[in-house]
Image 1 (tube, rainbow, N blue to C red):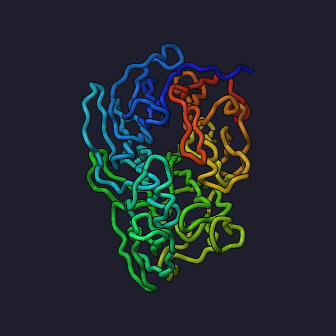
Image 2 (cartoon, one colour):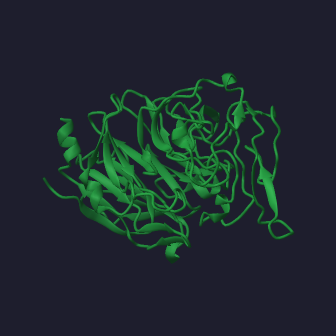
Image 3 (tube, rainbow, N blue to C red):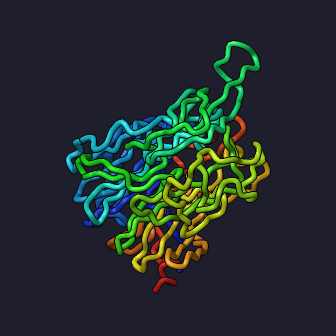
Length: 425
């Protein structure tokens, strides 16, 4: 069996690879300036993947982080997470805005888009907070460095329990000043039991859709914390990889898994009070960095029942994106943990490899191709050669002193005779 080989290197923290129907591909760099990297996202177009991987830059200066791209009818739809915008890039390099003024800034962003069987553009919008309450973790995350920042916006009508959290106040006039913050409100704002918040669109922690020109924006489903990976099976079902909440911030949670969901119209996926259909009050989710969790919402019976997941991954593996194989299985990229930010010190290193997932029975097994990568973040199956392409974000670690990352270490791997596809046949 052949080994995976690097076919494109020297990339600055890339996030996305996509193939067009003609066999050409695009690779997007995030534009994050870690380690002195050049700021601003870029998109490279590759006419003959597998043969000529030099590529041509067709877009530059995109708002970081670029979190995703998809190709449709020769055009690229790029998610500029830092701007809350999805931009269409035509073959001649001209651009137009498809969707703008999406929620942000926050812990998470406007994520990747995918074209559905109905020819609509589906995309996910991450939460502004870890678990519904803006906390000091928003200040500590390296690329924010500011408070206050945007609070979460529900997609469905909710009722708050008034369970506010008290933290130190970095803006207080006196040393040791504290402030209380509730759910779905700005930092330092209190809530009351029974307070109603009306659902609206656009919202956070959701999957939405619109026409390819940006018109007719509507909610598909709410309650997905950060559905970073999104895509359709051949039978038209929409799947999402939802990254679980962390043991950090004002409302920490322990041992929350990453989840694979089937996304269906009008459903609630549980965030911020349920994880895969299990309440956050379950003992398994007891955090180390805070007290036992109570509900942030009340009157749950007014919402759709929280959905169960198709697959649960280990906590903190950071499932990012997936490719659908010809047999209907998924190759999933596990970016890996970001301790000490996402979990207490001493938590084992997890993720940083690929897994093969059967969405029908939920079974998983590791794929060795990911063992050579630093941080696999996206995968794709080449339509012309059937090879597995693995995009590596590069050398990136969180430390007690912030981000430690090395520009130019991102790369694209090609695996011609890949074990997962052999086993599928």
